[in-house]
Image (cartoon, rainbow, N blue to C red):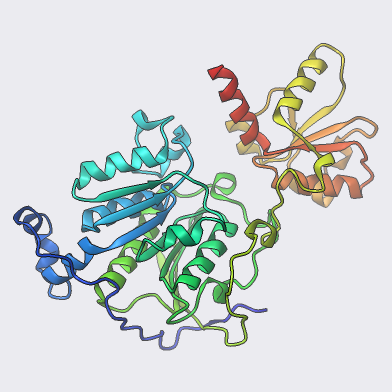
Length: 400
């Protein structure tokens, strides 16, 4: 199926009704706080009361979630729900502006909540420290008017889209990688959904995550602010939303462009939630390929035995050189995936010696393993969870 993307002629004219009814009159302190909004005729006091009565759920308190949460709170959205199961790390601070140095090691939920309440103590912050999946998405989404998705993986995007479609809720989506950003509004009830833009997910490993490919930190603010702009317009019923349009930003050239997204009349309706990791080609370590994997604990044990002269193998890091410079597993050698896949690096690997491969999280090392098996290397496994799992093991050991 081909994505129904068309050149922008006349974008879908979506003068949608306000998503949220106005709440009670504003208190004197609120009148002062939101006076600059109240002065805008399109928003006024009624629009501000709609914002205070709104319930917005943000997926992720990371690069996109950080500016989105701050601007939603500043705008006076009454209830902000946050879904995240991660903790703050030093590498986050280059772009995740809701967190600070003193938050390193804390959960992102707690850090984000404190920053929001410091900015606007009138916001009701609801924390969901869970991993979003098909078993909990519908019950979580039911309590909110609109969903903002700042996730960085395709499985979550398809899950959020389908759950929002089943519940008839609008879904504001943003995506960033390196210097490129995209933002749109999906609302199956009134127009296209995410599957009309991307009917099928890309093959695993073909699109790097921000952790693998990098991201221009300031891009998060540009796309996150646009996501909040769309949410506020939906809540208050003003302006023309991005429903039916995809907005693309190239930070290197400072150019925005739009393309139209058409709803596919032949697409099957969304009737249920599925296993999105399977749909996206991501299989957990407990799959039928268990024999291809080695755990971080097993690797540590084998490294110790190799140091003692009791084991022999080559530990191969298939990431890129800059990743290797930032962090590495002691005793590993760098041979990037590209050279393995095209065959130019195969001469650097010995036959007849066990090979243990690793990347950041396991996707690229699985591809390298398949290439090496096809080239005749028999004794090859790869590290489950990659260097991320190794780092988690190190932290666990330091705490014990």
